[in-house]
Length: 204
Image (cartoon, rainbow, N blue to C red):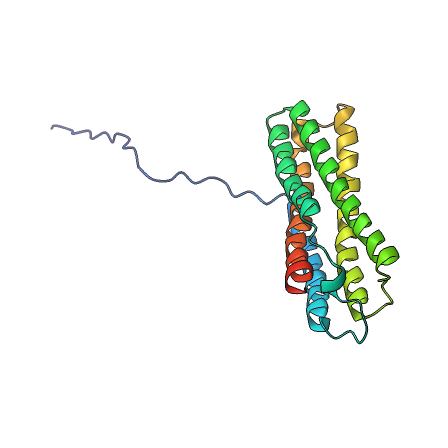
């Protein structure tokens, strides 16, 4: 009696290899929720500004007193590029590059705030426009002031990270946390694009 033994050889199977699903970083989820909530608040202020354009019974009007803040806008939007590079450098364990880019981000954000402060000084002292002057003054200071407050909060957090980075206490494993902070900063910059268009372009 002849017994036949059949051996099965392993045949490679072509196709995508399944990778285990990983939960998103909780900090990213939290920041996403915050951005959604903050977006709703900004939408309310933007809609209010648009609704009340031209409804002031007394002057001054936006066309009479507002100038395009081109320089400040360029500084703020450029800061998003530097904070992106800061995160990228930290992922590569390049602490020096991260520190330099964080410093540039803080500097550009501070310049933007300085241009806003200069604009407010001009409006209040030279043009007599305050938050109580008319509907334009109320909606303008509310919307631009809300955004400026977010810039201040972002600069405080970025400055703290910069201080820790200068002290050598920021490491590669902190890159996810810095990325969460960068999301907030990108959001602040994106909101300014909307504010710029509504207040200084459409609103004039």
